[in-house]
Length: 296
Image (cartoon, rainbow, N blue to C red; front, side, top):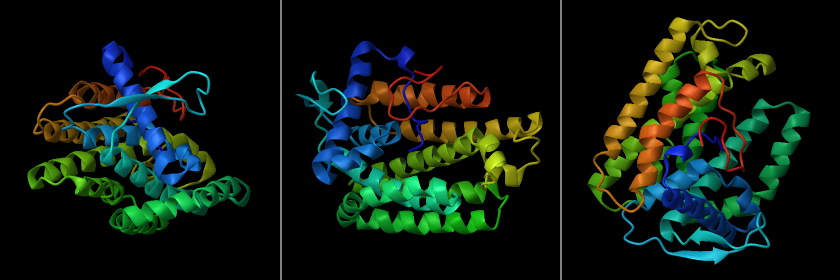
C-alpha cells in the first residue's frame, strides 16, 4: 500500500533474506487461502513486516514449497505463519479498502475508474475480512473519517493529521494477549504509522502540487514548486527521527526471537535509510517487486 517498510537487503544475511522472502510469499498464500485469489493484489512489504512482528515470539518458522502465479514453474519457499499471518492478511484488506475509498474521492472521474474497479473486485474479500476482524474495520473507518475531515479543512496541523492516520495501526496489536507486550506493540505501531504518513506526504509533495490534491506538508509549510525550504526540511527530519527513535525504543522492550535479525534490520537500519533516500530524491516505490533502488 505504501512500500516504505522494507529491509536493507545489503545488510541482511542470506538466510535472513531468504526468511523474509518466505514471509512475503507466506502472506501472499495466506491472502489467497483465507480471502480468495483476488486478495493477492493487496500484498505489500508493509504488512509483511506486520506479519513478522506479530510472529515475534514464534519458537519455529515452518515452511513449505509452493507454486504461485508469479512463479508457476518453480516452487517457492513459503512461511506457514498461522494466526499472525491471517491477521496481517485481514488487516491489509481492510485498510486497503478504506484507502481506495479515499483515492476515489480524491481522483477525477477517469482516474477514479481504476480505483472503483479494484474496490469492486476486492468487495467479497473485504466483507470476509470485516467479518473476521470487525473491530479493526470500525477503527479504520473512524480514523480515516477523521483524516478526511482534516483534509477537507486543508489542515496545516501536521501532528494532528499524522495522528489521525497513526492511530489506526496500534489497533493491530489487539491480538497480542499479554497486556504489557500489547502496550509495547501499540507504541511501536503508532510511531511506525506516524513515520509512514509523514514520509509519504513528503514523497508525494511535488505530485500533489501538480494535481492539486491535499498534502499536509504543503498546508503546514510554505513550499516553492512543491519543495520545502531547507529549514523546514531540517525540522521535518527531526520529527521523523523522533518517531523512528520511539519505534526503536519500544522494540527494545521485546524479547529476542527467530525474527529479530529481520525486525532489527528494518527498524534500526532501513527506516533511517529510507528517510534519507526519500529526502535525497533517490527512493522509488515499485510495488509488487522485490528490488528497491538504493535500499535493498
